[in-house]
Image (cartoon, rainbow, N blue to C red; front, side, top):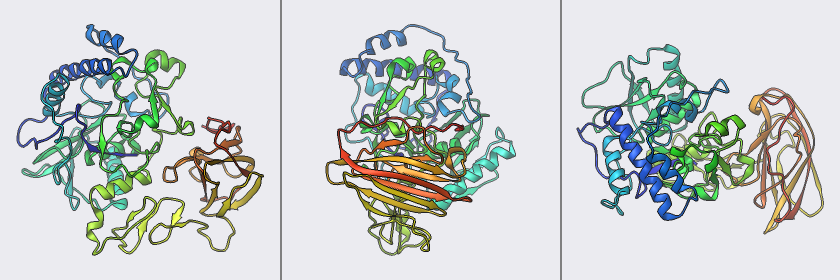
Length: 491
C-alpha cells in the first residue's frame, strides 16, 4: 500500500511549517547528520532488542570507513536503491531528501531529547498541495526533451486518475509554491509532501531516473507518500534479511510511519514499494540473495516491480486530497472503492467488483460470452475452462476456515513480457491487492490460497487466452507451493 505520510514519533517529527528558513543543509552537513541518525537508530535497535546483530551494527557504524560502491545495472531499468547507491550519504531510506529541520529533530528525539507524542501528524492543509493547481517547471539542469516528456506523461497519469491538476511554468515565480524538476547529481529523490511555503522544491531526476515508474514514484513522494514497507503493520507482511542487508540500511525496513488510512490493505504492488533486492551487500548481490522477504511468498519477486500506481495507490491519493469534495453529495462505496469525482453518482471499483457502489462481483465485460462467474468450492475437484477474449472475472469461494487449491491443466495464448497483452491475474490473498499473472502454462501448476476467496481476472488485448484448471476446497494446513510460476521463455 502506498503509505500516506504521517510522521512517526521517534523518527521524522514534523510539527511546524518551515517558513522562510533554509530547508536543506549543505551536502557535507546532511551527510554528517544522517550518519549520526543511523548510529542512534542502531543503538535504539539494540536497546529494544529487535535485532540480534544490532550491537555489531553499532560498531560498524562507529568505525570510520569510506563508502564507494560501484553501480551495478543488471537491467535496462535498475531500481531506485541501485541507482542511488553512491548517494546514500545524503538520502534517507534510499531516495528521500530531508530538510535541515527534519535532520535536527530526528537527532534530538533519538538522542533522548524532546518528545512529540501528540504532534506527529500532518495538519491540513499544510504539506498538501493545492489540488486545483500544482505548479511545476523544468530547471536548466534537466534540458533533455525526452526526460521532460517523460515527466509530462507521468503528470498526465496522475491527472487522469485523480482530481489533481498540474500547471507547467516556463520559470519559477516568486511567492508561489511549486515543484522543480532538475538534476543536481544525487540520483532519484524528492522531499515528502509540500515543504516550501513559497518557492520551489526539487524532484531530482538523474540520468538513470527517467523511466515512467521512477518518475511516478518520486512525484508520489512529493504528493505526500512514503515507502509502503515503512507502514507500521509491515512486519506482518515483509521481513528484512539482515545478513544480506548493508549495515547502514539495517533500520531501513523497520516500520516507521503511521498512515492516513489503515483501512486499506498492505499493497505489495504499490508504486511506492521497494524491490526484494534493495540495499544488498556485495556478497548478497553476487549470490542474487534478497534483502526483503515477503511473508505471502507469491509476492516475493513482484514487490517493487510495478510500472504504475496500483488501485490502492490511487484510492488513497484521491481520498487524501479529498477529491470527492467536488461532488454535491457523498456516495458510500464498498470493497475499497472510492467516489468518482468525474461521475459523482458512481464509485471507482477495484478489479473484480462492479456496480455503482462496488457491491457486486464482476463477471464478464462482454455480455455475449460465458466467461466470468461465481463458484462455490467443494472438497472434490471442479473444472473451470474458458477462452478469454475480453475482460472477465471468476470468483471462487470456500467455506469458513477453508482455503482453495488451484491446479492448472492447460494454457494456450500469446506470451508477452510481464503478461501485459493478455493472460490471467490471480488473487490468492487480498481481494484488493493485485495478484501474480500468468500467460503460459506455469512450470509449477498447483497453488493454494491464503484466504477463503480466489479471484481470477482474465484479459486479452489482441489474441484469445485459453485455459483449463481445476479447483477444490482444502484445509488451511494444506502444503502450498510458495513460489511464483516460471515460464521457459520468460524474460
